[in-house]
Length: 66
Image (tube, rainbow, N blue to C red; front, side, top):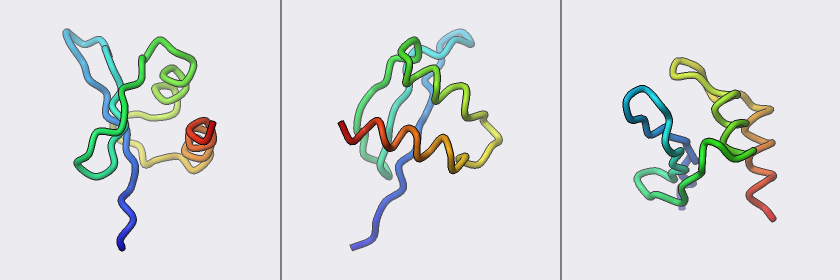
């Protein structure tokens, strides 16, 4: 079976990020509060034009294993 990449999508309203969606393909896994420690880490690590930084990706993945 093919593994689907996990991605993060910023949800914005009036130029402010109101939520971060963690997605696996087209499936919504969870919503992350951008004000939380994890949300701030994700927003700080990524920009709209960047590829996923390997270090940030593994840091976030490690938090999901709790």
